[in-house]
Image (cartoon, rainbow, N blue to C red):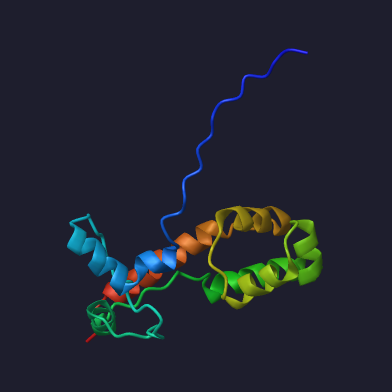
Length: 151
């Protein structure tokens, strides 16, 4: 067998545990020696300050704009319901036909759903009615009514 050439390994002793280097005494001792010491205080460390009122919270409270997603109008839901009933389908039958959950059909018919073009297209093909045109018309019609000033 060939001889193994072993390198010399030097093991150095640890300089102390992490807890010792974090103690106040160790920090002051290092500062006296002139070593570079970096200290940072954790924000709300060890305290239960989850519900702290900040400037941003107050600013958000003053905000009056109401942000929400547009929902499917109830009129479109009624069109879906009538088209489904004319085809003789239940909500579950229509849902299986378009590969969606029955709850989604119920949400669209009740006006709780956020419009999704892909789902609307599937429903249009299944019941044979154009829903997206109806949706665009209703949005324009409501905008026109809101902009109109009545005496």
